Length: 290
Length: 337
Image (cartoon, rainbow over all chains, first blue to last red; front, side, top):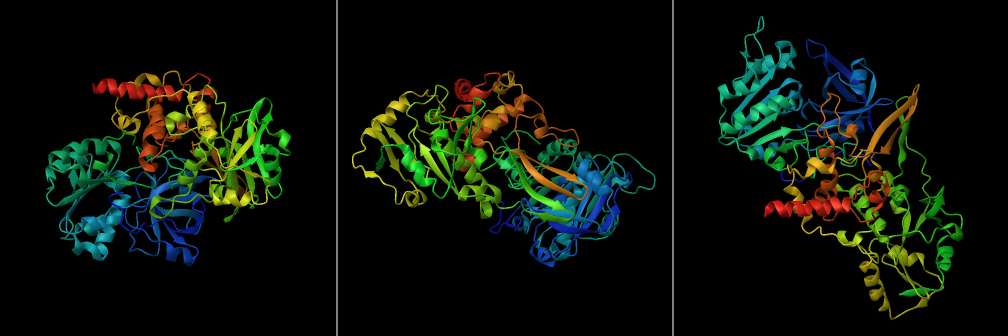
């Protein structure tokens, strides 16, 4: 694929179905409704830790023996070496089970899987990061990675991030910290007025229209719920962003995560193997199956 | 080329140190299973109800066992075997599975379960002098006389069997077999033409590109209507590879396994949130036809349909994928005018 660098960072085990043993290092309740929890996993075997190399945008299958597996975007950055972070929405069998686990519990993981944001290609350009809800995870990885020694390689970086309420925003401490920086304009917004909220009010598409990031020499990274994407796309298109400047990360039901079990394809691409990161021009003309 | 008067000679030679797997009859249906003797082989039947893909990719397969947090791979019980008397369409199907399951480096991942079985199997193909009315291999770059992909390939003739060894593995396997060398095999060309002429030909001209233009076509609105979504077509198909993964456990012990799945099932793409990117038969049939005739060709350069006709024969509501594909070609040609 067009944005794949020369070296593919893929899962290195000779049997790609075998999960690597991990341990839960830390758990934090992330959202006010308690449905989102962040799990920091650490490797049990130092050799596994050594061989685990990834780039922002990649994902893992988290495995609970006896229950199954579920795919999650990696929320930590490659520069954070002591844990692999996932923010998990409690929804199905695996995620409900995960939410009941405690620090210290053994757990399995397969990855890194899939491709990543082509950060190499973005060098020297402006970056506009637009996100909504809990899809912010891999974009948090991008931002963390940028701030950990890569910020100078890029021109302006603008962040627009929204959630239903202030309490539903992910990584609040970090957002507060980032807001103080002068090299990372960050626009936080919530759907409706709420007490004590000093940020913007309004949906992500509206806020994006107001802030009106320039498409000149820029790439736009966009992740969010389907409704956000649907209404933000016309806005950024009107601002002048071309499909090959817009990158998004897709989600689909997955099983194997390595392009064999079949279910996550969009046209000739498997979201698990050829994605999850796609530029919009790659998706043009393909069935809208996402 | 080499010649033997009776096939049993070759069978006996190969069965000396290998298990032979061939068509057997079970309750009036035919499957590729271990043969105890040459006589058990159903030589007069062209194709099994299921394809021989189950020899490499069983319908239900344990990926690993676990005990507490320890994962244990299944015991390696795969013995060297011979897939005996399989037809060119099925050999092509195995080849496509191999390309998909054996991706390396940037292309993708290698599936160790499939590859272990594949590497230990000698494929003995058999030309189809009497194709069935449901066959359409010649429309999808196949032929009833195509030996490609086999290790050993057998051509029936009036007075015996010609034996070709397309691979080194096949050549090595027939070392020591008592054969007659035959120089003139020109008769084969006529035999091939005679067999090919018996097969119905469909027009799939440019189908991979035409389907690309049909993503939003109203062609899909009605074609799926007769389908009851039973998924039988995927189960009997020699190249369908989709599978589900599931866990089973009791206490701290259990296993993770995979089972054949089908793109025609509603739950196949259904997400936990309730969102389904392929919510109706329309999208599911578009996926099925496009995968076989457009997506797979775009990635691998060949159709993912080998023209064996099993899906049409097994379909309880009589959907014929070849007719459907030909109709799609016509549809796009008509709408382009």
